[in-house]
Image (cartoon, rainbow, N blue to C red):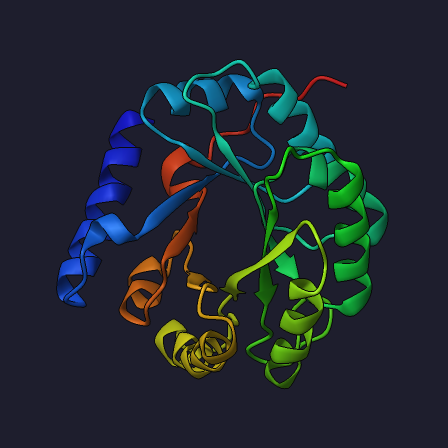
Length: 232
C-alpha cells in the first residue's frame, strides 16, 4: 500500500509539472469504499488526510471508528446521495462532492443546521454531468449557477466548487475541457468556489491538466485484492 500511494503521489507531481502547476495545490483523496476501517488507519499512518466514501452506511461507521485519529481525517462523500441520508452525512462529512439537485440542497441545509457542527459549514461541490446520461448523477451545466445560489442561501452550507466524472465513451481530456468553462462561470459569481474535483485512478493526469484541485483515487492505491468483509 505504501508503494502504491507513493506511486500515485509521484504521478500527481509529474502531471502537475507537465501542466506548469505546483503539485502542492492538488489534494489527493484516497477512496476507501468497501475497504475496512483498519485500512483507513493504515493510510492515515502513511500521511493520508483526505478520505473518500460513496455509501453512507460504510462511511458513517468508518468515520466513527477513526474518530480518535490525530491529526483528524477529512471525510469526502463522493457518491450519489439520497436526500434521506443527508442527516447522517452532515454529521461526519467535511465535503459532499455530489450535490446535483435542489431537493438535496434543501435536505443538506436542514441537516447541517441540526447537526451541531460548531460553526463548521458543510462544503458542497456541484456535480456536473458531462454527457447528460441519466443514472450517473450530475446537474446539467446550465443548472450549476442556480444550484450554487441555493447552496449559498442556506446557513450551514458553502459553495466549494464543482465535481465531474469523465464519461467512459470519450477521451478524458476532452470531457474535462468542458468542465473548465462551467467552473469559470461559477467562480465569476462565487469567487470562493475554487475546488475542481475530477480525475480518478485512470485519468488523473488529464484532470490535472484541465485544472483539477482534487483527485479521487481508489484502486491505484488500495489495489484490486478482495476487500475484507465489513462488520455488520
